[in-house]
Length: 253
Image (cartoon, rainbow, N blue to C red; front, side, top):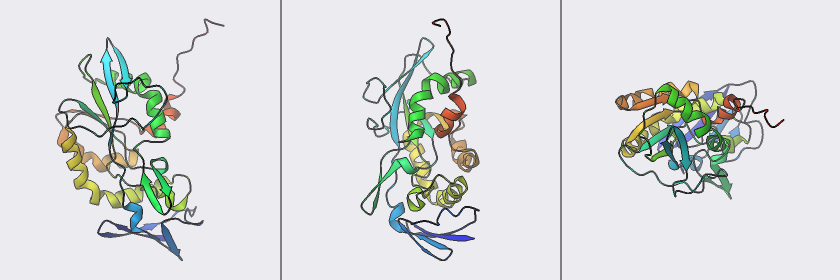
């Protein structure tokens, strides 16, 4: 049994964690180990990954279209054109993620520097599958949008800090560990999450948290029972689940 000690804002949190594979067995960053005790430095949770407006989404003549916030065409995946989320009624579609992972931070010196939400493979999957698969499926589920109206697709993390501790242990994602850290931090992020939802004034919410954590934010989303809401899989999984759904064309053979 490993005990993980966190200092999150003004809160001291202790988490008991047990796994056959000890992800903390190697060299650690932003943390110290003494026996079975891991103490994560307070500065690890100092800087959140801010929510961002990633794409303009529009449905025209039955076809979904996507552009960057500056109106330019979406070609290669990038998060560098992200914008701050504007509080525009009847315009924002929120894709609720979960918490930032490895690609959403970089290490500079002894500091953990935030980049953007879905800055790695999750963002690449969004670029690849949003209008080819996800929004057509939402069409089938009854999503209701105005034709030729631009909507802002915004990315929101209920816990905007790295709960996977990826930059502490340097290993692959351990979902069990991530979930324990996430559940320990969320009570201290909940009020801020509620305020952000209120500020963004969503017209549609897509709950893309992973399966075990979806229910954790359900009470907060139930406050928006008068708007359209859909459960979707986390973008990290889209390639795995959707990549084999392609139209085949043998006419050129």
